[in-house]
Image (tube, rainbow over all chains, first blue to last red; front, top):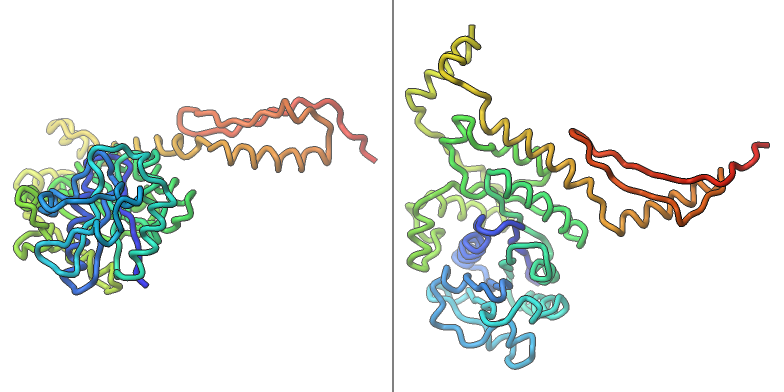
Length: 264
Length: 87
């Protein structure tokens, strides 16, 4: 029996889809049988991030409406035989599926796969409720800035209200240089504010843009720092104890100088 | 001494400290906005407890959270019709 987790954030643009694609691909690379489920109906993107946009025939709404069997709608990944995508519909809206239908799909996928990773739409409306309906646990993605942390706090409250206790946190797009200068919230600040467990930290990394351009998740790129962070997160999800990455940065002349003065 | 240097270099408080303080404040208010379900449960419990000691019109019981500058205050208004006689 596999497990289902939802990747959510409240705010848009913090990296839910990128995270879903990378963790899912990471798990598949480790030999796990994985389905990625895109529940962002009307704004589907997981397909392009995975580079599978040309292979879509059926989507999640076709399954919900009974026009197509669940298995038939799954698209096999280009790289891994044990990785599949259930795409969102692009032309319908978020009310085209119900919480019960999603839950049913999750329950049935769980029987055959080790992991079902759900990409949640932004917002707190029906799309969010659908996405969390079948999940066993939730991964909250946030960036180190005020609006995204505020929305994460709201989402954590809503998750707990819907029975998903103890969500885990993924801090995305961290910029170690700015943290060092005191111009970006650090890991401890965010854990103190949100009071949930940390699953991992992914640094801001140009390789994410490049890999998304190509439809090749960065987790497969050995030279990518963000990819390494996602590989670590993948192993933590599988139950391994992996230390946080070290983001030490060279200190610049000016930051050394200010520090010197501050000590006095 | 340090402050003189800081003034010289135009050194203000770290922007992340400002972010953290602002967040903590805004979240106090966000978290204090009670959902209707919680308000209804609270009302029910309040009615059960208070009616042991006094008579009041249940329909006029008001529960709300008011935002003050750096805190949130739970306000409960209960117009009492009669205190119970103490024995």
